[in-house]
Image (cartoon, rainbow, N blue to C red; front, side, top):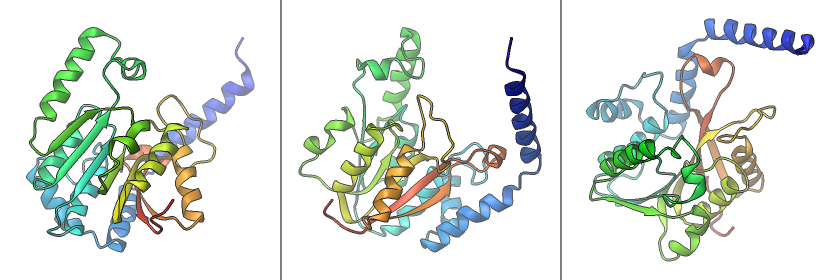
Length: 261
C-alpha cells in the first residue's frame, strides 16, 4: 500500500506547481533575460531581426534562448572571422541555424560515434527505424559548407584540436559528471583569450534530483571556476514559459579571466 504521507506531499507539490503556473508572469522572465543582454551589450532588436529572417519567433515560449543568444553574439564579434565549436550536435538543427547566422565563419560540431553504446541507447535510437530517421535528419541539417561534423567522444577533444583555438564554444553534450566537468575544463583550454563559453541546461537548484539527462553538476563546476577567478559567468533563462514558475533551467555565458588553467 502506498505511503499516505508521501502521497500527501506529492499532492501538495502538484498543487503548488499548479498555483505558480497560473500566476506565472511572462514579462518578468523576459525582462530578466533582456537585462542580461543589455549588460553584455547584446542588442535585443537585432536578435528579433535575425530570428525573424530565419522564421523563428522572438517570443516563442518553446524556443530555447540559446537561439536568441547566438543570434545576438554575432554583433559582439563584429567583422571578425571566428571559429565556433559545438559539443553535442544532436540532430543538427541548431548547427544549421548557426551556419546561417555565421555564414562566413567556421563551425565545428561533434557528437559520439554512431556505434557508441551511449549514443545508441539514448533518445530511443536503439530502434533501427528511429536511428535511421535521426541520422537522415542530421545529415540534411549538416549539409552546409561552413559546417565540419566530427564523430568523436568529447573526452578526446584536446588531442583532436591541439592546434586550433575557438572564439565561441557551445556545450550541449552530456550534462552529468564527470563528462560535463571535463567538457567545461577542456573547452576553457580551447578558448581564445577574448572568447565566450556557453553551456546549456544549467540548473542552480541544490535540491534538484538529477536524471539520466540533466543535473546541477555543470553549474557547480562553473561556480567553482568563478570563485577561483578563472571565469566570469552570466545566466539567462533557457525558456520563458510557465514551467519556469517551479523549475528553471538556465544557459550560462562565460568570459575567460585567465588563459592558463
